[in-house]
Amino acid sequence: MFYQLATGTIIPERAREAVDAAAPATYDEIINTEAAMRIPSRDLLVLLKDEYASQRAIEQEVESINDMLMQAESPEQFCRAHELVVRTGITSKSKKILQAIRYTELKPFRFLINKN
Image 1 (cartoon, rainbow, N blue to C red):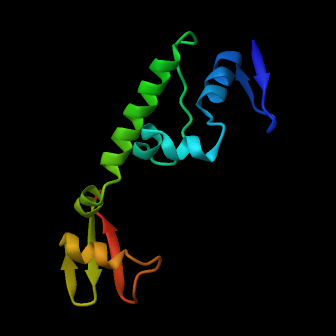
Image 2: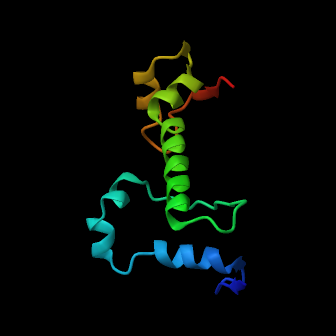
Image 3: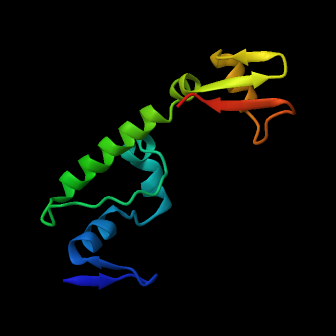
């Protein structure tokens, strides 16, 4: 009924089947599948209430979660949620915010403020 992964984590047998089915065998399969091109590469842990969910139901759930995350992580949403503080003032202009975050560190005397 339960299966232990190499990392020591114990998961239900149905989850093991889903993980095995979702893992592609070769690099070519990843490149050639249209679904792999649409879904960003990220690690998701999905907990289901129904242990008898079909593989298609699990795939639909993961796709809907990815769609929600892609919308929430879009540059438009980022710019809407932040303001850029420069030494001379504060701006909410998307172009200036995106230019400022292009690098891993902001230039001196520039700060991002989350509006939340």
